[in-house]
Image 1 (cartoon, rainbow, N blue to C red):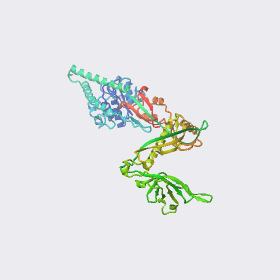
Image 2: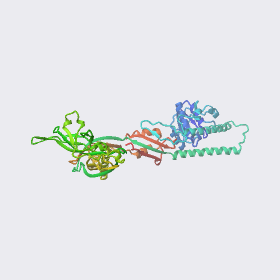
Image 3: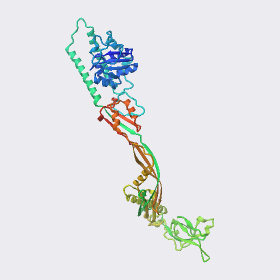
Image 4: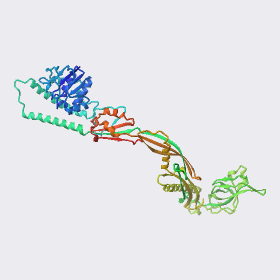
Amino acid sequence: MHQTFYIDMDEEISSVVDRLNKSMATDNYFVVPKRAIFLQSIVNLKLLKREADKVGKRVILVTQDEIGSSMARRSGIDVQATLEGLESVSDVYVEAGKNAADFEGAAADPEVTVNTHKDKQVRLSSVGSSDYYEAHAGSHHDVNIPKAAKPLPRHIPINSVRKEIPQPMKKIAQREMPKEKNLEKMFSSLRSQQNNPPAKAPKIKDGKMKRVFFMFMVVCLLALIGVAVFLFVPSAKIVITPNILKNKIDTDIHGAVSAPADALGIRVINKTQSISLLYDVSGKSAAAGKKAHGSVVIYNEYSAAPQTLVATTRLESADGKIFRLVKSATVPGTTTVGGVTQSGAIEAEIIADQAGSDFNIDPTRFTIPGFAGGPKFDKFYAKSTVATTGGTSGGDSGGASAVTQSDIDSAKVKTEAALKDKIATDISSGLNSGEVALPAAEKITVTKSTADAKVGDMASSFNYTVQASAVALVFSESDVRKIVEKSLGSQPQPQDASETISKIEYGAVSPNFDNSTLDLKVHAEMTIVPNIDSKQIKKELLGKNVSQIADILKKYPAIKNANVQLEPTFVSYIPQYSQRVDIQIDTSGQ
């Protein structure tokens, strides 16, 4: 069952909604002439659609107004050009004194019944549902207009798209409602006077008619501007994120100097460097004095096994004075020559444990207190062949500083580290384009490490010199990439996608400096980016509304998600013009 209603040229949205609510039919056909006021605003059409959905009725507009038809379809209302094809019409509602044949594009129906007892003033008293005016006078949950902040991009996930009513509709509806009420009252009054003319019609002043005509022209102009903006200004930017896949690849690579063309070639770099740095003496004191120093021969009569004595090992003289070894020394073991056992011996430098002239002693025999209480105490000893000299008291030192063992040890560590950094820089600067020098594939050998001062020397500073040689096995990373890509040849390759090696890392490194070979554990990452036809997607999206975007993008499994930015923000559809749509493929996540 359906009903047909004929809409006046100047009939307002409130009257149309009232007719819809009073209809007893499910399908309601509204025959609307061209340039009808009701059809000039998309807000009116959206309000009619919403009221129809609320009461569970279907609205079909019968009109030949092209602009009105376009806006009605975008509002979700069905449109047809004529009433042809309808078998019967259960009810037709027109204003008194109007003829259905006056409407453009609508065929006369033989079952038309005219209801002449409807009055617009009565319809206005109960327009729409009970909360019709309240919902439009206040805020609506689907309408929210940001005042100053820049509109955020609208995120359109593939699996579900939530259609939102454009935010600026609230303000447009609030501006339109007072105008509609005023115009409805004005036109209702005019119709009432036409249908029920008084005995003597009052004359309308020319000034009032001009104002009414001026207001009507302003409303028409604003409507035309709105339609132009709605059709031609909108733009859309769609950022598509493809489904990017990442495959990890682990492979072992062997490299050599004389490697074949499909293997990893190795190049050998040799460097020799020396460095000398100046250091300040740390132990400055006015009462430091100067320590006596000399040399001794250390004997091993204990066994044939050598014995290592570390630096600072104590040696005690016959009169109880303590001296210490300046450097570590390894005492050779005993030997047997012609049946006679000879003790092992080594010469070592010693320095007094404390400053002072009391440590200037004549040649004597020394014991090693560290072996006291054991069998080695009597079998290990030292003898000096010359007197120990150089010891002075605090007054004799003149406030100078004495070089300590900690000064020399610290200088050694710092100088050798500085030399290694210098060699690494030299190797790096000698690399060709694309070559890699791994720290684990470098070997640095220190050939000289010495200070120009001894422990106990009175000095404010001293120099420490280190000399070293280095060898490095380097290779080209492009050769590594070729070997990794070759190892992928046997694996199935995805269709319609591009593959790139996005990352290469090196694990275990095993160099052989004697044979100039290198074994590497390589960890590579392959990025697979599907190819997306943005031109075809744009062609399918032109003119589609927000709810249709996800359905279109679901057809492309290579798309992970998409962000849609519409300008202006109240627009809810993709523009019809290809130049106003920009589609970008975002692969930054790879």
